[in-house]
Length: 469
Image (cartoon, rainbow, N blue to C red; front, top):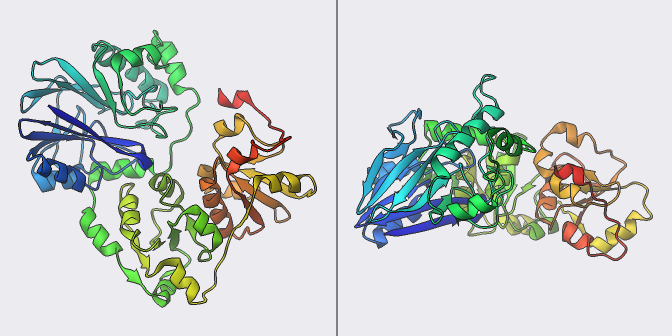
C-alpha cells in the first residue's frame, strides 16, 4: 500500500495518490494533471479510478483531462449530475484497488453530493479516510455553498452535515488517518488548523465542531461568523460540473509573446494587465493600470477573487515564469489569457515607455507622519478578524477581498493621504495597484505591514474582540 498527499500551498489544496499492486487511484486532482501521470509512470502503475469528494468551488479539478488521458472513470457520490460521463456511486459501494478496498461514505452537508472515501488495507482494516470538505483539521466544511433555493438554507445544510459526521465519520476508529481536501488558509472552512492531516481521535478531542453533542449546538457554531465566499466559487463549481478546455491547448494559446507595440494595441480599457512579479519589484515600477498579484503569495485565490472572468488578461511576468502564471490561473478557471509582454517589465522600461510606481514607507515613518498630517488616513486591508485583533486608532478597514466593490472605493476622498498596509506587505501592494487603477494615486505602501507597525515604540493598538465572535 502506498498513499501520498500532493499538497498545493497557494490553494491550500490536497490531492491524493493511492496505489496497490500496480493499480492507482487519484483523489481530488488539480487541473494540471502531469504530476499524477508522472508519479504513476515512475511507480509503473495504472490509474484505475479518479475519485471526487464533491464539486469543488475553489479550484478547477483535473478529473476530465485525467479521465481522457487514462481511461479511468470519474467517481462521484450519490445525487451527482454532470454534463459528462461519471460513475455515480452508491452509499457503501466498494471499489477494489489492488489488495485494497475503498468504501464510499455519502456525507452531504458541505454539498449534497459530498462523500468521503474510506480506505481499507490488505487486511480490510480501516486505514484512512479522504474527507474532502466534510471534515478538516480543526474545522468542518462551510454549509452555505450548496444552497439551491429558499427551501434549503445554510442551517438546513449544517444539520445535514451534523448527521453525516455523527453517522459516518465519528464512529470510525480513533487511529484512522484523516486526509482532508484542504489545509490552513482555505476559504472552504472558517478557520482550518495548521496541519494537513490528522486522525479521527485527534479531531474528536480537539475539533470545535465535533465537540458539539447536539444538532442545535453544531448548527450554531458552524454557521456563526461565516464570511461571504469568494466570488469565483460558483464559477469554478459550474466548470467542474460542465467541463472545460484542455489545459495543454489553453497554455499553448496563452504562451503568446507580444512586442511592446502589440501589447499596447491589445491593452484596451476592457483588458486586465496582470503583473505577477514579486510585490517588492512591482512597487518600484510597473505599467500604468496594471494589477499586481505576485506569484509568491496566494496568487490563484486572489486572482479569482479580484479579477473579472469576462475580461481578457495580458500578463507581465518575470521572464521564464509566464507558463507558471498561466497554469495557476487555469487552476481557478481563467481561460481568457491573451498572452504576455515579451521581455517583461524591464523591456518596457528600457524602451522609455511610461511607468508608474508606489511609494514605500517604513512603519516608523507612518507613525511619525500620523502625528503631523491631519489628512493622513491609515487604510488597513486585512480581514475583519485580523483588524479586530489589533489595529491603529482611526484606521479604516476595507478588506482586500471587498475592494472590487465600487461602494468601498467611494469611501476614499481625494484630499486624503492614504497609508496602506496589510499583515506583511503582499496584500497592500495588490490593494495599492487597485487604487491606482481607479485613479487614486495619493498613497503610500507601509513596508512590512502590521507586523512592523506593532513592533514600533509607543504604538497605540486598538482591539475589538467583538469582531472576532
